[in-house]
Image 1 (tube, rainbow, N blue to C red):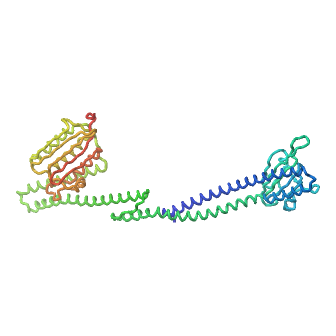
Image 2 (cartoon, rainbow, N blue to C red):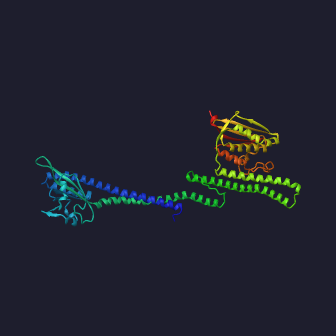
Length: 498
């Protein structure tokens, strides 16, 4: 059930929603309780102060029936407005006045009060000791020292002292005003607000789940496309492409995926071409060798011509040997097994030696060699054996594709911290679309292979790998019928740096 990304996203988002709303609900419930409780306390304290002011007027007009009636009316009004029982007690804990009388109290509460001289009295001294000690206000929560233990809920009791100036001119606490309200009144307010919150949460959660569903589909749909495409490509269908144009990370993934498919397609084509080319390069000389040897063994080739055919067999064996060696070299290069040992040497002198080594080929075609060097000596830092192989290959190619009495120009040019080497010819050249393919293994510009009967088609691939191993660049410029120029760079030796 939870194996797909879509289901995992849905579960994660829903859990986040539940956790967030639960945390918010718990915080709100606690905060509401605290806020409502504090507001209730402030309301009762303010009511207690106002009652205290009216009580002062009443005390100063004790024998006035109107004042007494007015005071009782006020107590009844405050009781209704604050939702609390209001008492006025003396320092003995006797309830002198109540709102409007004790008949409003629950029988269970009255049963815990003592009756003295027709008035109820608080049974526990702790219920009035603090207020008469001068603490203002005194707030108690719970069962108020057992007075409300049979009601089944907690109570809030706010006590305000009533101070009156005596004969000695000093104010004393002669009474206290008690405002008693059940906590259920506070909880009722909190529950009412919380119900509105729960309703809002349910609506918000439903909307959020719908949005999460849409959002998850939007995220997982392209991922599913990528998964399906990967399965198709794994079966060898490289024509499949992703059509995802989003500009986020998934869009970048789709773009990289398409690039990977193109690379795999090219690699597959290269693999097939490589196998075909290797098969061709091996089959041709092996067929010749087999045919000539059979001809000698069965007497088809007369004895006087056998030496000539054995020379051909020898050349084919040497060609096979070169092919195998170059294949092994190229494989080691691509596997990073060939390490470059860089030293300082004179590149001009190395080019001269390479020309001498190919002197016979150059002389056979009566080619003119032009050397255009930066100076008499130009030093570079590279692997001399690897660079000699590069130069020999490039000169050999130039000789091969240059017509008789043609010109080959070899140049060196210092450029800041590099040296640019070029090998140019005025031979047959090639089309521009061929330039990117000449570095491929077994690619031969001469499709008929008439000019390259001894070549393996691996030379330029090896050259490019050797230059890349040096961390340098190599490229070619060509125009059909006007010749080709190969360029590559090498690091300038420290001795030649300014």
